[in-house]
Amino acid sequence: MATEFDSDSFDADVLQSDQPVLVDFWAPWCGPCRQLTPVIEELATENQAAKVGKLNVDDAQELAAKYGITGIPALLLFKGGEVVEQVTGVQPKAKLQELIDKHTV
Image (cartoon, rainbow, N blue to C red; front, side, top):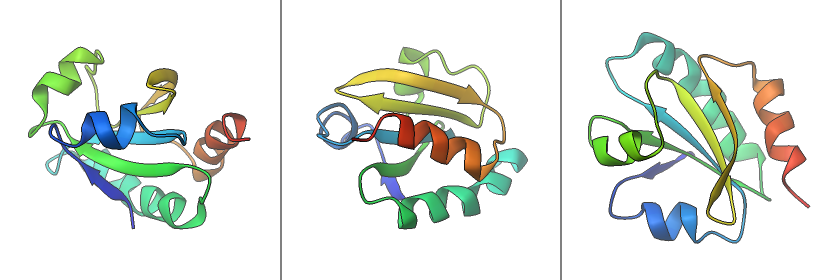
């Protein structure tokens, strides 16, 4: 199951993680975000070398602003506390897996 990140846990769960972390910036009212949810859940279940989770932008507006999120869904891949990949919009599972694989050892 995909991890639910929030403002309180973001530093520990994402920025300080020793694994790459794919974060789906989303909102419950966003149709494309809901369309992407099953893909995020599958990636979370299938990846042991990376964390995969979601961050509700309505509940974490300051984080969305910090990372320049202007459209959702937006997917950011963090490694070592830094954004190493960013894509916006609904993406095929294979493309997201490719991003994860590129940054896992």
